Amino acid sequence: MALLRRNLKIFVTVMMVNLFIFILISRNSGQDKNGLHKVVIPSKAFWTKLLPHPAYWNQQQQVLNFHSNPVLQGNWTAAELPGWLNASGLTSDPCRPNYKVTTQIKDYNSLPDRFKDFLVYMRCRSYAAIMDQPHVCREPPFLLLAVKSLAPHFDRRQAIRQSWGRAGVTANRTVATVFLLGNTTAGDHHPDLSAMLRYEGERHRDLIQWGFRDSFFNLTVKEVLFLEWIQARCAGARFIFKGDDDVFVNTRRILEFLAGLPEPRAKDLFVGDVITNAGPHRDKKVKYFIPESMFVGTYPPYAGGGGYLFSGDLAARLHNASRQVALYPIDDVYTGMCLQKLGLAPEKHKGFRTFNIEEKYRYNPCAYKSLMLVHPRTPQEMIQIWSWLSSPGLTCQ
Ligand SMILES: *[C@@H]1O[C@H](CO)[C@@H](O)[C@H](O)[C@H]1NC(C)=O
Ligand SMILES: *[C@@H]1O[C@H](CO)[C@@H](O)[C@H](O)[C@H]1NC(C)=O
Ligand SMILES: *[C@@H]1O[C@H](CO)[C@@H](O)[C@H](O)[C@H]1NC(C)=O
Ligand SMILES: *[C@@H]1O[C@H](CO)[C@@H](O)[C@H](O)[C@H]1NC(C)=O
Ligand SMILES: *[C@@H]1O[C@H](CO)[C@@H](O)[C@H](O)[C@H]1NC(C)=O
Ligand SMILES: *[C@@H]1O[C@H](CO)[C@@H](O)[C@H](O)[C@H]1NC(C)=O
Image: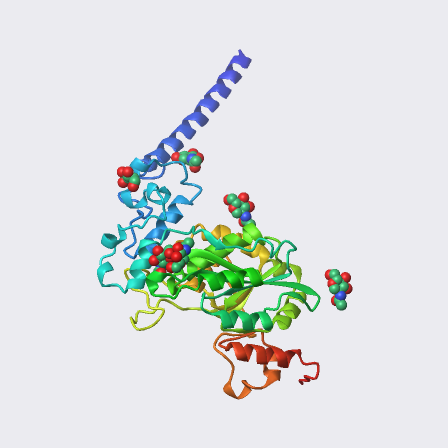
């Protein structure tokens, strides 16, 4: 009987505790009705809807970003996407002239011709090689010098060959030189230099030429094709210098600089005359003018296109990144955009003088000794400066 009463006591106690817990929970769930556990349906979308950017380049970049986003990939069918994000636009032959832009950009008809030409062919990145030099990197060079040139600049190329671009072994390191050319076409009233160019190519075996129209706005095409060329023909190059054909490059100083680089820094190397906090010029008279209907935003840090130095390792990553960056008509800004895509920024080095040196030092051989690049210099000046620097008698403090 006592046992039964004890059991009853335990039973009642347990029941009381349960009742207490029940009351607690009911009170809390009373509060829940006003918020906590109820599924909240936001009255507005809490993510921003992807709307087409009014500027054409920005919009093209949105499309590329969307289609290269690994989270979204494969979860959409073309039918579900708004027309402007439609992937078929990307996969249809990008090298057919895209006349849709003529209506997609509101001030298209009033833009200077170079913009019209750029926009209609903006999606095309593949042009056949007219001349190639597969032999150049058969022995991978320590340093590849790649010079952007134009077909008629025979004298600049020859001066570079006779001075800072002399291929072979310098300071115990192998150096190879190539010139990057597009096609100067009859449509632009260029004289036909193709036979002379062929002769030059056979004689020096350092010309690389592609079948696109060699214009200022197509320099980005030259950049993309060169990045591809490095992967196909010169993936073993340790370092690459890319620059214009009107600069003097102190190749020995560059080799010295590279020899002193610690390994982690060498891997991500990208140095030059870096421009930060820049943006598009809105003055129509400036060479670098970009209309607002084309691009809105600021430029990432970039190294002036006169010449910069980077690692072969980074060249491979840049090549990958370039596929996800819409072509921009200014090549050095474009390369800055690709670096940004990789989470990198170019590094400024005061040895790169793309805005020249003080006039009073111009004829002072010692002024060039510690520099890596000076712009601009004529072919004769290149040969002169190189001979100063090569003279065993040169002594500088
Ligand atoms: C598609 O989205 C679902 C969730 O909606 C996700 O589980 C799946 O991984 C996504 N597929 C791909 C290929 O990303
Ligand atoms: C996507 O583009 C293709 C080809 O341009 C077109 O046939 C298709 O109708 C487009 N889809 C949408 C949803 O706009
Ligand atoms: C030249 O390079 C080779 C191989 O890298 C090395 O063995 C040699 O010591 C170097 N010579 C000089 C003078 O630096
Ligand atoms: C290069 O330009 C020349 C001269 O205009 C032309 O005859 C030739 O077809 C062009 N080559 C390519 C591949 O565009
Ligand atoms: C770039 O080259 C292509 C192919 O030759 C040409 O159609 C296009 O007009 C050029 N773009 C510019 C801006 O010159
Ligand atoms: C380039 O992209 C390919 C394919 O996405 C990848 O396999 C490769 O590792 C990438 N290379 C570099 C250097 O990032």
